[in-house]
Image (cartoon, rainbow, N blue to C red):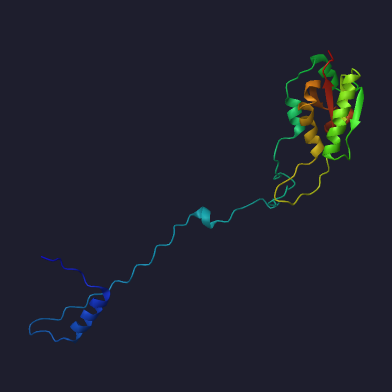
Length: 202
């Protein structure tokens, strides 16, 4: 026995048209026409309050640049903070004297205005010469760097030399000659200069 299938919307509309034109038999009433259901509308994708609400940024924040004030974007901690918090490798008494500006550097190198390549070459020669002469404490002046506005998509560091010189002093070929590196006392340049304490020659 075959199953009865339901009428398609077109077939139902045609049937109702025929039913309206037909005359009912005596004693029977014409059944009311069935309402054709309206096609369902596709459901809209769910929305959340977070999707509707626009992102709110501080009024002085500029995307892709370093904004001044409390909303500035800093990619890494200042190199001077890392150097100050590093474990002391040199003699503790000498470190305290140096830290208070009471230990006078025996030689100094000023890297102001040099390119990174030229500065690294000059630093290598300076440390080699100081070690050969038996110096223990030397001063390397890097400067704090210009605070130029950078509107590029990736914020740039301020003071490339200031950040690169400590890495050069720890890496080969200078690393084996260097015992300690610290920010200089303000009488010797403060955060714009570095004390470099050399190992004793054997």
